[in-house]
Image 1: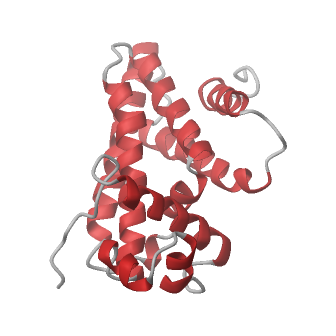
Image 2: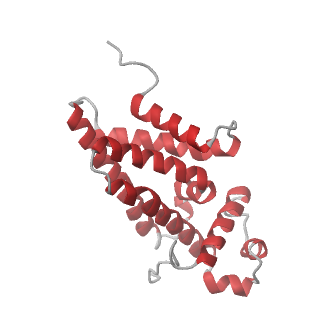
Image 3: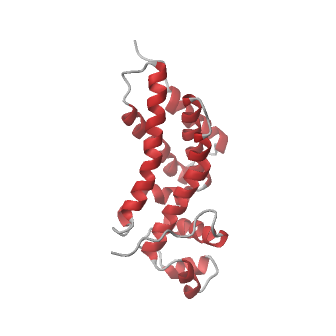
Amino acid sequence: MPTYQKPPTVNDDARAQDIYREAARIISEKGFDATSMGDIAETVDLTKGGLYYYIKGKKALLFAIMNFALDLLEERVMAPARAIETPDNRLATLLGGYVRLVLQEPAAMGILVSEDEKLDPSYRPRIMERKRAYTDYLHAVIGEVVAARGHSDIDPALAAFGILGLVHGVVHWCQDGDGLSEDEVVAQVTRIALHGLVSPLP
């Protein structure tokens, strides 16, 4: 089994960040199987040898892109949420921050959401572990909100997966969005997730 080695992260190497973003964009457009290392090298203005300095192959590249997306998720969404005291505001930050990140980094976040099956089996456990960290934290915060509001009829785990499904839908919406601004999308998705479309039924 290959030895696990974490690729350069958000704070480690700006050039690596550019490569991950461009590679994610190309993979999103062409598909993982149809994208070659030569395609990526040409786009980022490197020789194939130069690209292999950063990434050892397509499977390692996919792993690196997912780690990059998860670094962004931790830095821009989870860290700010942990600094907030009230559960309601923490939940809004977790949700709104995730939606904003999807809008700002649609290619990398889209790959994080949809390309698990293409990962090398030796890499998959680490990515799944990191993805679960966000899901588990979201679940816990929803549990706090539900308990504080006395909503004993709501299952926090089901609510967490429902909210994630709504946010992940934004990845596909980004491909043919209807001109809403980033703030408008964040506000609408947050409102739908946290307040619903209609008043509770009697």
